Image 1 (cartoon, helix red, strand yellow):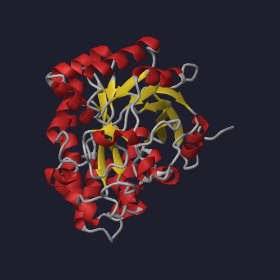
Image 2 (tube, helix red, strand yellow; image 1 turned 60 degrees about the vertical axis):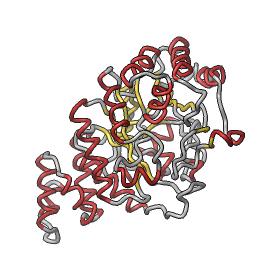
Image 3 (tube, one colour; image 1 turned 90 degrees about the horizontal axis):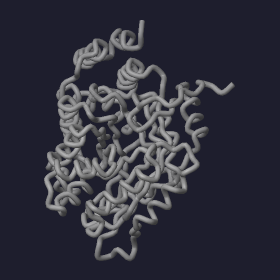
Image 4 (cartoon, helix red, strand yellow; image 1 turned 180 degrees about the vertical axis):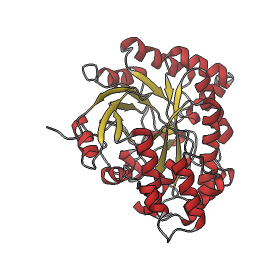
Length: 379
């Protein structure tokens, strides 16, 4: 008997949970009602069995990572998101940083002799860093190192720079694509439901705008990631609503590489009075995401945000990707009190994290082409 069959044989499960387990075993899609029931009634061991079954079906015991670094052009931002510990308002920008193109190119050149495959560009929304500025940056990176995949800009950044340029989303995205943009990160999604979004980040692009930008990128031939910020003022129905909108969008375009649940961290922001959720709730979130997001091939745990030990634990709850080496090039979560204050891992350290929980490390590129499968255990 496999693990789900053993689960179904357990007399302690109610009828609804057994039916959901049967759907998962048969490869059938669970409904919104099922998803909400899992949040409200699914015990962690039950959820872990279902999520791990799906992970094995999709990926065997392979766990993916890439060699990447981040460029954060600025933490100056015109928006005021309550959960953000990273940004500084434009009028108080003396507390922030603003990098010029030459400074950012110096960061890229630092990796000229290293086998990194991706540069990840994301930061605050600065009114003087416009569409032409970022097109120039992209084209210079492409010309300097054509093999380096250029992933950049949240939908929040994109909506602002394109609107300021007085272009349509289609026109603006095409201009960035022509300049060298190859894929989008998943940031800025937060929680789509307006009851929550209007309370924590009312002044930035809404759910429909976020989805439109990503699906426009997909139609241009770019891929993207999707995120959800969980563990603050949202309830379970808001999480399901968010995942359902993403699942429908993926049904339409198929351009999302992975889904990344992001844990709310309460350090140094306007929501610091809200306690962070437990590690158990983290694992429940990842497991239900793996069960619900059936048309997303990959589920990622962003280790700098969760911490190394919790990230390892997610590998038993449906996760098959740990992001990348990072090389201490991001401050977004460390400034909010994340476990990793200096987020940098060597390839060997990442591989050992994966091996130590019985999985097989696989280096990938940004769009999940395999670069190297490492030995399950070192010789």
